[in-house]
Length: 105
Image (cartoon, rainbow, N blue to C red):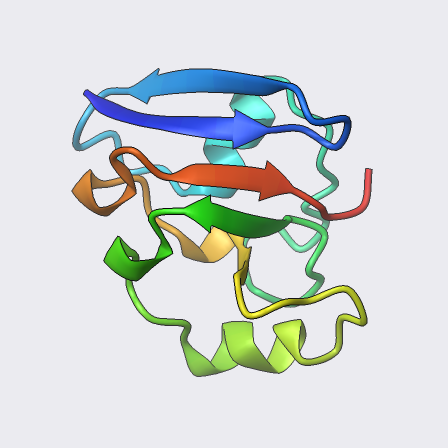
């Protein structure tokens, strides 16, 4: 199982356990877990409505790709810890990570 923590917009945290090899990205897991994120582009790194901050474990995640970086650069609230949930595959690199939802509701 892949275990990580999600913090919502009001600061409440919930630990999630996702089966290994499920083939979903973080955006899909957040939507399936009934978090309120728009994710209007459906995972194509075009809208940034699945914006999250990586509060812990960011060093283990794959690097930001060019498409993701282009969109993050347009966000006034983006930080060095910002990522798009649609670009993060749920895998072993997420074990122990903490993600805070900051995208539009």
